[in-house]
Length: 295
Image (tube, rainbow, N blue to C red; front, side):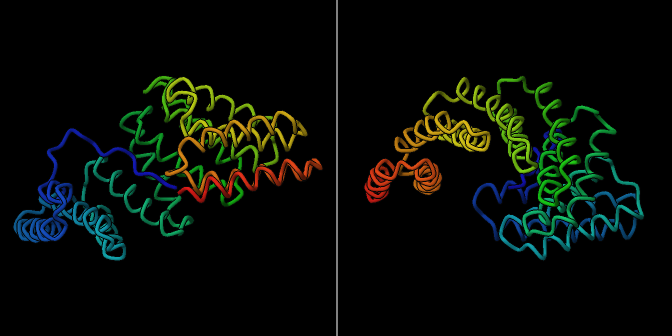
């Protein structure tokens, strides 16, 4: 799932966003609309106020998106970008609105429209700072799109650059780095390179175990991923052990991880059955049903 990069923190939070974060969506929408109207009126007398209109459109789009008015948010973001084509807008503001629109399109499964906006936003951010953390997150989102489109080389390029920036800015031992390693592993697996996938999954697992502890659900996810790669490589006994460890962890968190537990359990059963161990598969099937019944 695409993620929005962290918003710049150097500016004062707009009142509409404060209201939104306080659980007052109607007031937030009203405040954002009033700020936009005020900025438009000022721009009628002062052409330099166009950047205020641009910012107000961006805030309105943010509020509309958060309250579920996706079409209205898209219209606000697009109007802001049309305004930017006619007036000089600060690159950081422009990058942020492009990113917000791209993320909105990405969420609505219009990836081919989101991709060029992500590319432009990356250029905007990196023109100000080649190692910008927001650009790294955008690269991660963009890589997911290119992976889905079968453009594996482009996806790899963005994942690797994202990994480089995040490690530089946040250090190797961070969940963000582990997540990119996991994404790289998924890319290599999908592209038909299980050896490289296994290596990337192992890197992510090591970081997660160090940062989150041995029994965290994200560790279980990494173990399941490695098991899948090992199975593809014919390392079935090792894959079984990883699946079993993953399932043990998920059982500890069954109330919140029931769907993940069932999905991993079904993969495990399929592998066990393929190895001719029907009794073992049947025994686990009963255990899984019993565990799921407790939720």
